Length: 397
Ligand SMILES: *Cc1c(COP(=O)(O)O)cnc(C)c1O
Image (cartoon, rainbow, N blue to C red):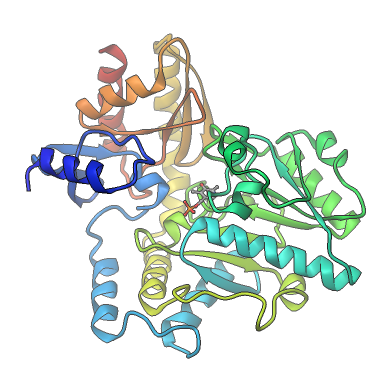
């Protein structure tokens, strides 16, 4: 099928909720993607921070093929081997207790919210609890996740959302304190805000929120859907802060392309929240998804993927900082590890992205004026150099 036909058919039959770039991706190899015309792109988007291992990882692909030949789906009415092993790997990596697998990030948030509400319900023997979320946050598009997403534009057409949600300012402890009352059951935030524009939590803030939660028996929910799975240079971004959540959400790179998410609970929360009848999913944690998760964790361990990110981060940051000082249109850089944002001023960020694509580089935006770099975690120094060269061309054209 020709490129133009593929675009035409998509626009005719797929509900138009995305303004897509005019290229039709066909296949990938390593950290490069190829379109149906054979043009090569260096991929610093990774399917929005999903494809951490790059394209065509043999171990990963073989694990999926092997599982497909056995069984893809069983339902959660039965046991299957990959489920327990995947849950153990995720729980061990987080040093937490129990896992519930979902099919997406937004579903992981739904489950985390339900677990927090149930915990408070058992504690107080009453409902009507409140959750504190952050302005400029992003937690997903389903109605519960949208309710804790601090973006009026995303919320407005869908009001009323779930009740009892209060918003505070990220990295402003006093604003969080001001929203706490005896009804508060959870505080939810991204450890590093992604869609909102790449804002890492400050250590002071995260530690302060943790202390408030401990003081008031409030659950801390950290959304690691984008910043987790090695992207920050640690397996989970909170591990760098010396702060631990009560509930953590994961998705994106957890399956490295197979749609999967999870919420992970510490012992206290696991033992005092959801029980049979409270929550469920037909697909969540099915054998194919769990085979992907198992392969991802095995490869992370074998190839020291998170350590690689930590090792190469200073070089990436140095090259990006050079760009910032060289180009007036770049106002600054924010981020951690391989989750970096370049702040753009005086030019629409979409225009730079379009030019980057023309020059064979895939990058995306975050917030209204941030160029977001979330490459596969396996990039090398040479890939960073290639990205810088291509981005320079985009900035100059
Ligand atoms: C992408 C994202 C989500 C939503 O995940 P989906 O799989 O798109 O539902 C939630 N939280 C954060 C921080 C994200 O980056």
